[in-house]
Amino acid sequence: MTWRVSTLVLVLALGSPAAFAQEMFKSTMPDGKVIYGEKPEPGAKRVEKVVPPPPKPGITIVTPADKARADQAARQRTARTEALQRELEAARKQLQRAEAAREAGKEPLPGERLGTAGGTSRLTEPYFERQKKLEQAVEAARKRLEKAEEAAR
Image (tube, rainbow, N blue to C red):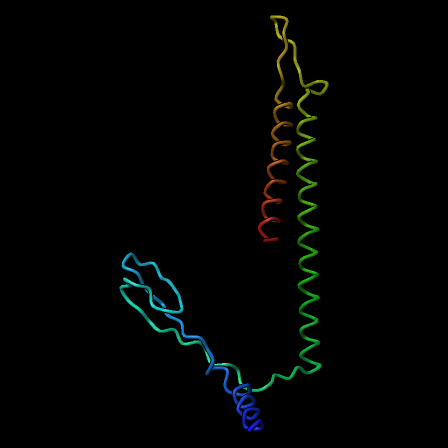
């Protein structure tokens, strides 16, 4: 009798995994919301039985060539991630330098201020051109950083 029980356990253990697959239902509610569950949702407008995909039969053998390709792909992903991180860090530093240069460049340089007849002074066109270039450098650094952040996502 014991060998029969052992045989039954063995047959059940080696049986098809699909035989033990859990039944799933897709219930579409009147408001269009879709709910997946082990049983149909009460009040559902439509209920469909979801059939799980069949299991892959057999054993997959990984050859040395397969492993080499997978290793190469992993190295390439790592190198790309590191390159993206380096670009991100360089873009952040460029933005910091550009903002610092813009802040330091607010003071007029010698020759960028002219005296007026009323005894005051005014800023010259070269001062405003320099300010514009400093602002453009900050904007270019911001765009580079945004592009690097987008690529790193």
